[in-house]
Length: 138
Image (tube, rainbow, N blue to C red; front, side, top):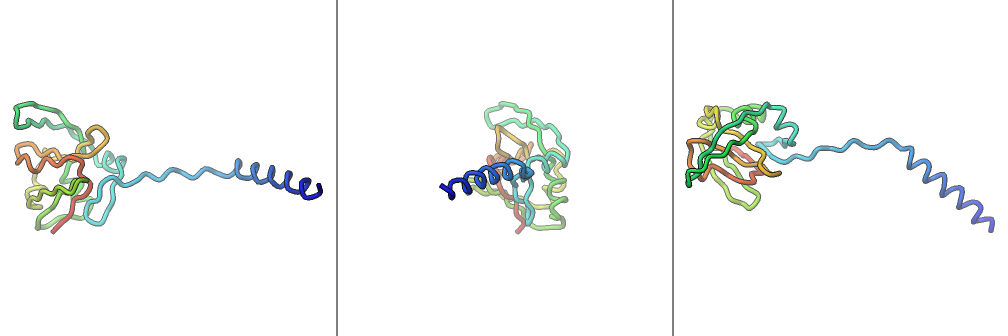
């Protein structure tokens, strides 16, 4: 009986203390790795967004909005020369010259139905990588 008298107040005190503890801020998870750096959705949006039209092989045009690829690469410290590789969640990869990517004003990383995709107007369909998760430099 004495143990019960001790445990009940102790249990109530623990509940009270845990209810008063400050909440930890949610840490936004990285959704895209560029070089050695991870970017969250809000960090991508903070780079500024532009809208571009992309016409697929069937002639259908869609407008996408996203972060300019050149700004993203520069922010991640990818400048100079080399080849960048876009990697999708399913392992598909496409590559292009870094200089070409840095010079493309209409190339973006678009947010499309909860995932990211490369939108590269006037470029090969292979570069339109869906569900992109990583951009690396080789």
